[in-house]
Image 1 (tube, rainbow, N blue to C red):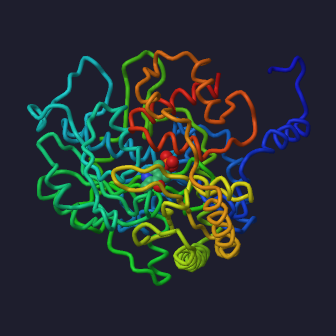
Image 2 (cartoon, rainbow, N blue to C red):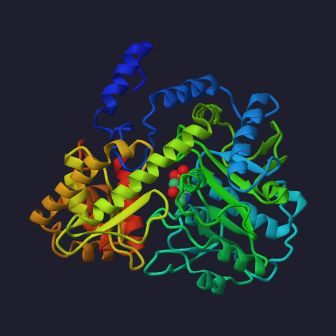
Image 3 (cartoon, rainbow, N blue to C red):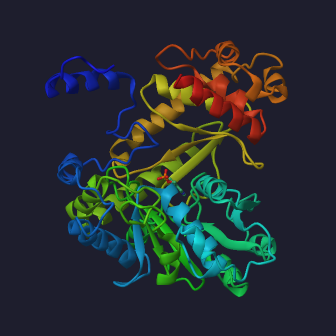
Length: 494
Ligand SMILES: *Cc1c(COP(=O)(O)O)cnc(C)c1O
């Protein structure tokens, strides 16, 4: 791809515009996942300029770039102030929810293993207080907890104990979580809210149960942390969920969601400085420069920090409160409107701004999603899991209110079209064949053929009908879904 001679910036930007032709739109509210739009272009522009200004700064060495320390303290301080902490609350600015969760899990693991000795030096040995006979460390999570906890456990060498949620409300069950705690448990998790149905787990009860057993409790407020306090101020009923709740030892809050900042921005807060030290990593075990990292990444751009800092300041309290009022109004309108569409039903009682709805036997939600896509709207499919039916997920943002009636019209029209079309038809026996295959032994060509049999042209461009794919995946156990997704990604990038 590398050209013989360098190309001009104008030419390159024109090419990027062409490359993005088939992308979903990042602004305008027709894409109800992945992107968070305020509807105020000037705010996103301010963020982009600040991002560019900090782009080439490397946060690897905060003593070389003190602007990083000042900005990070201000951003972390703003989150602490909103989430039950104070000016001295220890926190870390990270690249996203996954990294915030990774660090919270590492901190919980290492504080148990001996006071947060986080260094790499092999000769120093590692004390193992407390967990000596407990075996491999475990984290206890509700099944609705984000996969980032499974990822953290996978990377950090822990086991996940996933506990069913209440079948009617989709909220975590504090008694069931408490019953799952063993001497190996290093962390208990609650979500505020959980992503799939947008409901808030009973944080106070879960944290109390964990504290009674001497186990730390992390609140995953990745999506809700920078929204729930403003929703509460705007009049919504929000139960206590933050660091002010006894027993909560850490909390994650993504700024690149309801903080509306450019991607690459999240904060994890700790109740105790020792816990933050257990999240840090230092290494003196090589002859090169000194390694002292607060995050998983080492060299990284300060662009996201600059973008986050600028967005918080460009919107201010007024801005966020205003966006929350719009978000609340749009969410209520959406919940009522979906309830009036024949064949559709909202799952649980959404308590934030995330709305999931399912269809009856006549309205296949995966077909509905494809129909909406043809009309220029993206509604996010969620597969059935742990007794929760397949559904579509909408993330309501500040910009949604302006288009909520149009969105409801699209959902109603797409539901009508899905009813007429009937459920997606899966090639007979395909799920059974897939479930029985050793996917690791399959070559890429055979996998590509299998994909073609459900209408997915892995070599082509454009938008495949996803309903059949989703229906096939939906019929498979989670482990097979995972194997297929990994193979899909590997072929996509072949
Ligand atoms: C988005 C999200 C995460 C993960 O965040 P990323 O920024 O995508 O890494 C974790 N938990 C919840 C509840 C989320 O909504």
